[in-house]
Length: 142
Image (cartoon, rainbow, N blue to C red; front, side, top):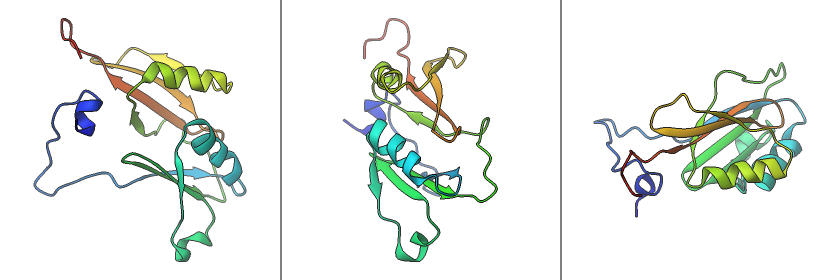
């Protein structure tokens, strides 16, 4: 089963340029690495990735799960992204919502995206994150 099939999106349709998302960068405040690590590794179960030596001196944190990579970069004049956000496909949306609730992280469900179930949550620094799953079409068994 392909990744797209697992998440209910059918086959991928690469462009002539072969675009694929390599990573998403989220800003964190100076000294925010431990809180980001606890959330992305401890709560979401992602794996920390070693930053290249030339970039490690800048601080921050890189994490990965499956084909998703998130780079948390230190921003001296940090302000959380409360509108801009990554949309992260999840195989079991309800299990993730339960896991976030178990860690006292608020989940805000939104049913305004046809064909999908989704909710929003925030990382420990207030950056908005969207988690979503494809909703099967009526009468379709997945």
